[in-house]
Length: 215
View (cartoon, rainbow, N blue to C red):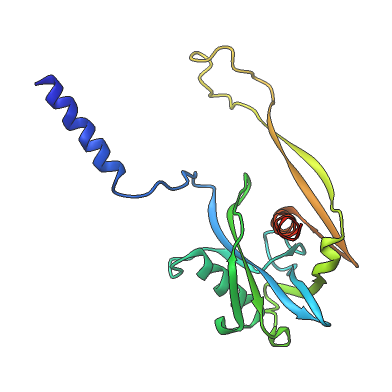
């Protein structure tokens, strides 16, 4: 009977795992966002459109970014999120945007799980930024980005256990700041703008992939 009972338990576990695909196990601080890396035709060549966030915003005011935001219940997919947010921020309709595909997504420690999509805005003259969210937009020629070597710094991350950490269970756990890992931060410059942070990480990944494709 014991062998039969064990087989039943194993079958239940097998059935449980077969009900759905595995997903990223994220804590409550991490949220999913969809952004668009918008390509446009500008002065006879392809450029990348960037936004400067409004100073009215509470999160990263004045920073350079791509259009995008947090996924909402009405969004069926994160691509829908990227398109919807782009339309809201740039005054466009979904038909104005052609999605080319998805880039590698980023899992950050301080904010969103970022899902970037590459797309083309057919007529940049149709762009009418929402001044509540966007202070200005600017376009950088793709050629200027491909020829630029970004500055790079290595940021370090550490953690420290709280006072109620169960040292009785793990007496040798360090009581001081404990360095865990680090990550690279990239900086691109164009005229009076600095592109850095998550936006630069997405941009760097796209440009490196494009260079590899052309080599």
